[in-house]
Image 1 (cartoon, rainbow, N blue to C red):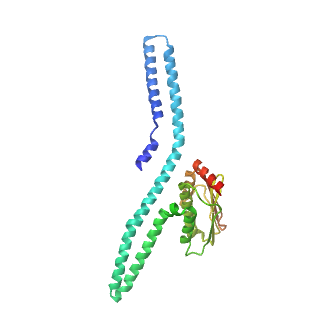
Image 2 (image 1 turned 90 degrees about the vertical axis):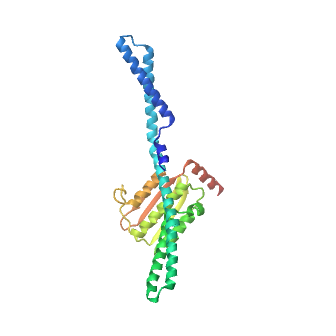
Length: 297
């Protein structure tokens, strides 16, 4: 990870060459001017050309530096998003493979003890078995949230449907998922962002909104993929700076969309539900794939 981040801050070979050449020209110009000043000689044309070349070198270096400063933040944002997802995947593997296996072993041992416990201790052992089973289920759920493996195998629509089915199974929320076109050829980073934003929105609805109805809609448009999440819950007052106001979930949504060059609109009022509208623009290659799939349909 550190090697990748370090490569972002390094200068490309061309600016390094320009900078060194400019330094050499400035040193020669300064030395020549000092010699002429000490010897009271007429100012030669060659030295004038040398000074002009040094000035041009400084101008080129400034232009290249401005370009690098302009494009580096987006590159860094993309890298940070990639690092964040890699870290989520690592934690998911550790939860599933290490902690999950330990809990499974503990549950098997508790089941073995339960069958051999005296009757007066059987009830306590049964509670222990149930607690271990519930903990194991929670660990698997967290692992699935951190790393939605079904995105690669099932695709975006099926993954969203599976998540909504599982998350809202024991709730009173009536939900609907609408996909007006086949979601084929969606870039991985866009699919992950859509899934994460939907996850966060559903979590907020269950924690705060007390909604009865939820609509999630995805649609291909010429300019990109649109995501609509609408509920009839309690609503809230959206902040212009959600991170500063403590709305960390909304801040995370904004960061993900901004890193992909998209837009986010949150329409909500207390008592009037919430409507989240997100647009994820097509990257050049994704736009070509999207157009191809549109023609095939």
